Length: 478
Picture: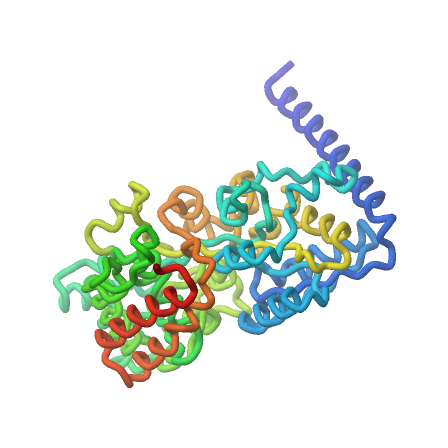
């Protein structure tokens, strides 16, 4: 038998096997859903591309296969948290699924808000889908495990905050020559803060000189929204070597330099001053920009480079109904201070934020078993490739090898390769159960820095002191 024939027979066998597997899966979903006819599951999540895919694609698919209706409420980030937490605190059971961002899961676990999914499926084997296996998830799932190693949330998005740049501008001969003349360097994606700043200053001036709506960088610098605080502590400060918000949990949760912390260290102050300068030469809407507006600013072609959440990379690079820079988007690692990359590679530090979230099942849900089915449905391998192409998030190891995902990887300039090969250099938020309380305690001071009411250095001193006081009041500092 020739190789071509053998290959054809093998492909046919695989196709038949796959068809048989899909048929068995459909049979499981139909049978499992029989006992839940008339049930409507309700979930709440942030209106992001990955969440919209659940609402628009996966929920209708699940209803068709099981007969269980699913209503996904997509709303703003702050409303999503407010609604989910109030529901779980009051025990009203409005929601059967809630979005759990990686940075808040530790607080939810500390308050026993979530069902142990691993245990629940072990106790109810009839509900266990043959197409669902926890082992299929990437290591990002570990952020949603308890101390017992069990899973308390089904990962539904995972992405890194990356350095996007305009390839059309960076490759323009006229621009390259002008940059070389001004700086003495070749124009290329920055690897240091000094180079990033030089590029930002150059393009802001270039836009002004050529009467273009073009600035040198983005800035997620809203003066009254946590997005600005997150950009500083999770995306900028680590590139200067300030990790875990500048708090040392192994040293009595110290935040001030005086007590061994780093929140108001020289490195932290240098990071903040650098970022504030970037904000000052960014598009004017930056002072009211959250993660959403930063993405739309870049997609509108108003910035030559910027730090943008990876969940937005796909539509920015490929959707010409929303983006003016389709085909002209490059990806790179963020600029770093000396020693930061070495610290990340050794596991002592990290170079930026590995963001993402999961869908969790509140203990207050009135439809726990039906919700367990839906969580498995969105967690099975077969639905992942289409999801990854529609919104650049990967939570399953096998998704990287899908042909459609590889095509999108090329269109995104190698973003998926970066996520797979260098995602380990990024990190999620520190495992602080006090995450929200501390953010709310120090953010008002941060906003005063942004509005110019407080000098940046003095403001960080105040933030560090306030952090230690809050941690003392919460019982973490002794």
